[in-house]
Length: 89
Image (cartoon, rainbow, N blue to C red; front, side, top):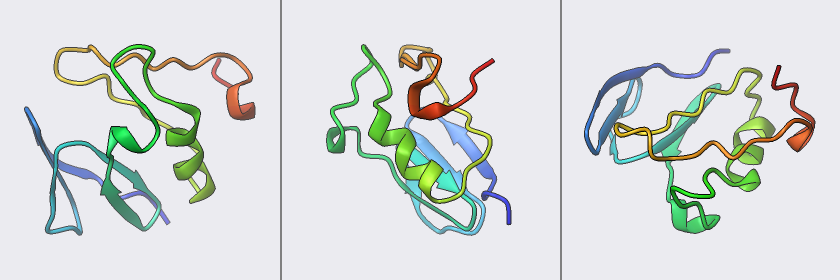
């Protein structure tokens, strides 16, 4: 099973194939998607994406992870080698 594709993307709006929702930010994984509320894990532009943000989708079966940095590329990925035992080479 593959993750749903991003159907459209513009400032503050993301649409995902298979969902009627319009997201500001979202997470997708094989078979689903949901709104990504940065407040849940303390994500901010800097230091960036938090381990818990990634853990959630990895637990749902993601094998290839793509982290968008936003329209202005302000969101830092904050990933380091060995984080969550992911091979980031």
